Structures are given as structure tokens and as C-alpha cells.
Amino acid sequence: MAVIHHTTVKPTKLELLTGWLPTRPWYRGGPGGPVLERSGGFRLDDPEGEVGIEFVVATDTAGPGRTAYLVPLTYRGAPLQRAEHALVGTMEHGVLGRRWAYDGCHDPVLVAEALSLIGGTAQAMAQSVSDTPDHEVTRSYSGAPFVPDGFAPDPADDAEGTHVRTPHGTTLHVHRVLTPLDGNPPAAPRGALGHVATGWPGPDGTRLRAVFMTLRTD
Image (tube, rainbow, N blue to C red; front, side, top):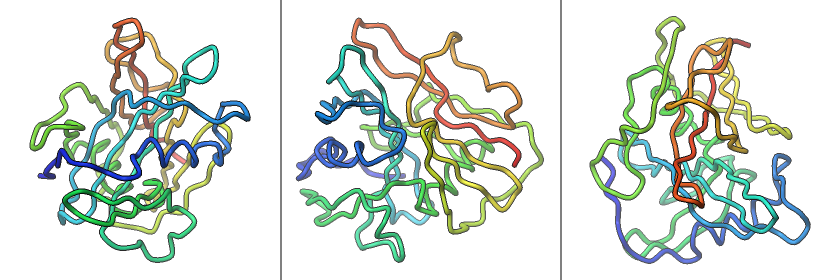
């Protein structure tokens, strides 16, 4: 199980994302840049214990409305080979030292564990508490059993989000702009083989919930 260290991180994750988000095709903000707050998310454990895996919900409060973005991140103690294009930035962690933060859709460890979560063989973990499952995260899968095999992902971004084709004849769709849906918890979208959904706090004390990832056939 991953250990959550309550320590300093410089620059902060939100500081890194403030510069990175406007470079993405799915970014919905204006030219002034985002004003971000950390709204929620969850973690997954790397079976090898080497890579930090976090799904961050960052809300842009700069405009008249609030836009919640899903940013899967991985944290590594050394650069990921051939992934310079996916680097969000580097941070100095008060306990672990230099950390390289990557857009997790390009990281084979995160993609494999996200598929394991959908398939029911990985457990979502609390974002800020060590060794604690996050039972608000829900998932479903109705396809044939498969074993994620650590393939090298080659994701594609467009205005709707990020899409990762897998060797199993499926595509993992990461919903970068989160749209709250009716339902508690949200059900799998029509035609999907599987999905992951969870919630985060809204500005008025309500609980917002949305589908974070969807698995579909190619």
C-alpha cells in the first residue's frame, strides 16, 4: 500500500497544473489562465511500490462558472524513458526528494492499474490517507476477463478528453472535463463495457458525481 507523506512539495501540484492545463486541447478556460483549487480524487497502488498514481480533480474558478478537470498523474523518482512529451513538471518532495510528475495517460503503470480497477482486480484508495480504500469510487465491467499487460500507451487528446487504445480491442476514454450526472452513483454510459465514477465536493456543500473513465470497444 502507498504511504501518504504529509510534507512540503515545491512547486505544488496545482502550480504545475496552472501552467500545463492551458496547453491541452480539452482545456475550456480563457486566455488569462486557470485559477485552480484541489477538489478531490483518489489513488491507485503500484504493485511494485515504485510509482505514485493519483487521479486529481482540479477545479478552475477563474470564469463565471466552475470547470472541474480530471488529471491522472504519476510520480516517479527518475524520468520515464521516452516520455519527455508527457512530463507535467518536476517537484521537490520533502521526504522523497526530486519527483517527476507525468500525465498518467502516457504512463504504462497508471494505465494498467486503471484497467485493473475497471476489471475489478484493483482497489481505489483514499487520496490523502494511507492504507485506506475509497469506497465512494464505483466501477463496472461487462466484457470478457483480461489481464492488463503493461503495454506502452499512445494516448490521443482531443476537445473531449484523452483516448487510450489497448491490446484487448478496447479504448479507455478519460473524461477530462467532468460533467456531474444524475444518479448516486452514476451508472455506466450506454454502450460502455465498463466505467469508473466517483464524487467530489461542490461549492455549496453538495456532492458532485461524474463518470471519470469509460471503457468501450474499438
